[in-house]
Amino acid sequence: MEALKKKFADKALPMAGQIKQFVKEHGNTVIGDITIDKVYGGMKSMIGLVTETSKLDPEEGIRFRGLTIPELREKLPRAVGGFEPLPEGLFLLMLLGEVPTQEEVFALSKMLSERAEVPAHVFAALDALPKTTHPMTQFSIGVLACRTESVFGAAYDKGLNKKDYWNATFEDSINLIAKLPRIAAYIYRRTYFNDDHIAPDPSLDWAANFAKMLGYDTLDMKRLMRLYLTIHADHEGGNVSAHATHLVGSALSDAYYSFSAGMNGLAGPLHGLANQEVIKWLYQLQDEIGTKSPTKEQISDYVKKTLSEGKVIPGYGHAVLRKTDPRFSVQQDFYRRYIGQDDLCETVQLVYEVVPGILEATGKVKNPWPNVDAHSGALLVHYGFTQYDFYTVLFGVSRSLGVLAQLIWDRALNHPIERPGSVTTEWMMKKAGL
Ligand code: HAX
Image 1 (tube, protein in one colour):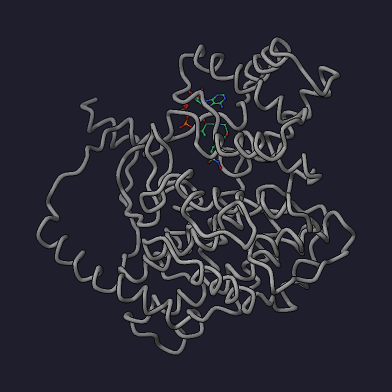
Image 2 (image 1 turned 180 degrees about the vertical axis):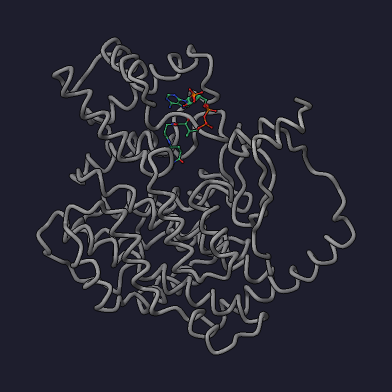
């Protein structure tokens, strides 16, 4: 841990000084316009945040420290005999800005295993909840219950020098990332498998151990989990889960409070919950039409019916992207490479052929193309993971990598408390000259 911290500090701490100087010299440079439609339109494309870990291009998709998803698949270290990148490698890339070595990634896997123990009271807090509690509610509560372990919280109570905020946040972030698979797997096994829990295997990497604790100790599932936890990790800073984590963290709330806040945002159906909504919607389609292999015409009718009921087509559209999400394409590739034939995945493909044209024809949807959530559930269902209301928890475990890497940067760069101005509609109308 000390070597990793030193590497980070050597990179981040001088940058804090450079940014201070940069803002002093160039603070008046104008970088955008604020217009009334942007403020009422959810601040889309209005630059208001600095995020180091990744950048989203509307036409091309996400780049993590400059690398696209196909590049990650090629360049990041893999498990021994594995085909997909290890998500630990992506965390190091986002944190340090350089592709890590195999040894660095294995060392992080080991460190996460060593820190994975979850205090008994966290499980007791989860056990106090009805099993019908949505898994995302349980997940957020589990994270908060773990806050007793916060190094930042304890150090701040005693009096923590500003210069050491990043160090305590580093500890909390690594500890939390280490514990999340255990918390999530506990929720999964208590909710769907009558509390038949599975012990962790500290010799496995973070994703493979998670798959095992969930109950999927197969090569297929380890491979899928490594890819899944890599591609969901980050999507620059303005999406709801990343922004909520950053915002709450700006009040110096520690990693547990901040990440839990991010998860409450991820649990919304317009954000991470869309992955469960996609499968629910596909199952309803199959039920209504009475076949597991609907035709394009049947899908088209069902899409139009969904829209006529005032509902969105889950898994389609995006606030920033204007093309097919590369996170969707990589899952298509995974399907073709490792699975080949599956009714639900074939339906996902037909939906892809049908939906964009229909959404485009509405004349209002800015991006008719699929996002990450349009495909992920079908791959899980193929391997027998059918409990779709748990899917957003998987997304959440992955998202910890990006938002917590950024939280460490936030503290190292001394980002201040976030506090944008707000106005009334009356103010807006006066400003427009009405
Ligand atoms: N189905 C039907 N209508 C849609 C739509 C979709 N998939 N996507 C957008 N629209 C509608 C909007 O509801 C909006 O309608 P109104 O003007 O009547 O309110 C109109 O098209 C314009 O919206 P937009 O500017 O294109 O989209 P936004 O930036 O406002 O919203 C969303 C982006 C992702 C929330 C939106 O596309 C959506 O609701 N998609 C379905 C839910 C989904 O898949 N969410 C996951 C997104 C990716 C993610 O965060 N994953 O975690």
